Amino acid sequence: MSNIYESAEATLGFISSPCLTKVELRVACRGISDRDALSKPDPCVVLKMQSHGQWFEVDRTEVIRSSSSPVFSKIFLVDYYFEEVQRLRFELHDISSGNNGLRDADFLGAMECTLGQVSVTDTHQKLANCMFLVRTSLRLSLCLCWSYCILQIVSQRKLTKALLKQGNTSGKSSIMVTAEELSGNDDYVELSFSARKLDDKDFFSKSDPFLEIFRVNDDGTESLVHRTETVMNNLSPVWKSFKVSLNTLCSGDHDRELKCTVWDWDSNGKHDFIGEFQTTYKETMKAEQEGKQIQWECINPKYQMKKKNYRNSGTVILNHCKIIKMYSFLDYIMGGCQIQFTVAIDFTASNGDPRNSCSLHYIHPYQPNEYLKALVAVGEICQDYDSDKMFPAFGFGALIPPDFKVGHLRVSFKDPAVVWVAGIQGVVEAYQNCLPKIQLYGPTNIAPIIQKVASSASEEMHTKEAMEYFILLILTDGVITDMADTREAIVHASHLPMSVIIVGVGNADFTDMQILDGDDGILRSPKGEPVLRDIVQFVPFKDFKHASPAALAKSVLAEVPNQVVDYYNAKGIKPKCMTDYESTRTFSP
Image (cartoon, rainbow, N blue to C red; front, side, top):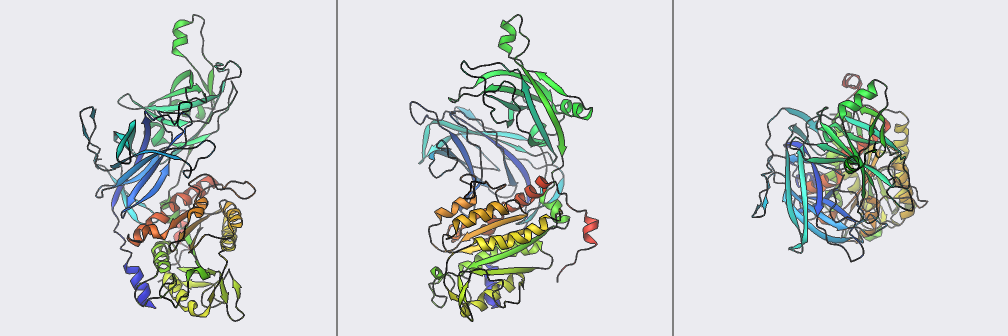
């Protein structure tokens, strides 16, 4: 039994902790070809990163409707490792109207580069060397998959390259990526704006205004910080409040100029300019601290020059400006937040007879099967964040002795009276022990498992403390049969301190499972209720079959730290003080 565990653990090859810095990437495109004579593309850029020979998605921008030269407001935040070659791929897609997913999107081209060092020779371009110089103080930080040192510095570089499609240039399309290392200020500011009596730019209706905020850089260039939503048919709009880091807003310089522009949105992408004004973060905070309402005249320079009696094109009002302390994953872990790890394994008949070497559940004396590889890869990381290392283990889809009724919610693999097993090795041993005693059957229902863990997470939520966050790992060989109930369970769980990781084992077609991940649009319950936050990560194991299992762990756990932080920050729950936590914490051997 221990041979299997040791063999699986040995195959992981976890790397030692490297040093890194955080980097923001901004993206813009130029010259995107129109999809046809009557309409412009609706572009979206997907950022992918290569790990162990596999490309996996990091994040994606918003969709900008009817634009051939989009400037995306979405900012990608990536970790830069000085000693590694990090390959990035920026894919441009034309998203069909009414759908933000990639399934029906048109691929328009891609650009590949490295994050650390970019060197391009072109007679028409002069590109800067984008090797980031590491030259300031160290700060200890921590990620769920590994710990590392953050080297903090501010520098900015730009890279412009042609988009390629099937190895050839995609017309005159190009993409520009601006990289900036973070300055180390983790605070966020929440801003809320409204406007009054804006100019009417439409003949048959009122203007449809939106606001853009740009940061003016040291070299005079401008970086888009935020683009509000469009308020339709309204000359006195109230835009939704938004949060932005001080790094992004002003690079930590409170006196840095901010340029704010108001536009009238048009469906053809040719938005009408209403007016602009300038301010600084220092000015907004001073007004907030003094309890004064601050407003700016929205000025159109052309009207100002041509019209003698021109006053303004409306006014923009700051409704509130509030500093928000954003705690990191490290803050919560160091404050005593425990990761409660639960595993659920598929025992349906589609896995094959465990006694047959072709079965996904076949136990080889020395070579772990895919279930074991996935279990150990993820569990080995998670158990380090649980002080007692005792895990609930579930199985579903099996006929269970002595009466051999379907047991889709089995609390323990080896003993009905034992709810917890000790560590990942205990889960592996329980898994091996139960296989000869059960009969694989069906169906593949996972909603009861999610509901069970959600019940425990709900109890934690009512404590209003950051002490336990729940991670459910589901290993399954096929598409689930209770999709509607599962969607309902996930939407409910999105309100709780909980994340769900689903690993598809075997060679089945898992296309329909991608809907649970939420990457191709917002997941909704059968009743239409959307998830509060994205808590599901689905990964097919076959994508990592020829890579180190460490790549699987990195992929499925990459989103968890942000999910933990997003949940507690959204609830306004602060980490406990280290001194309070250490007085009550006990460690297992």
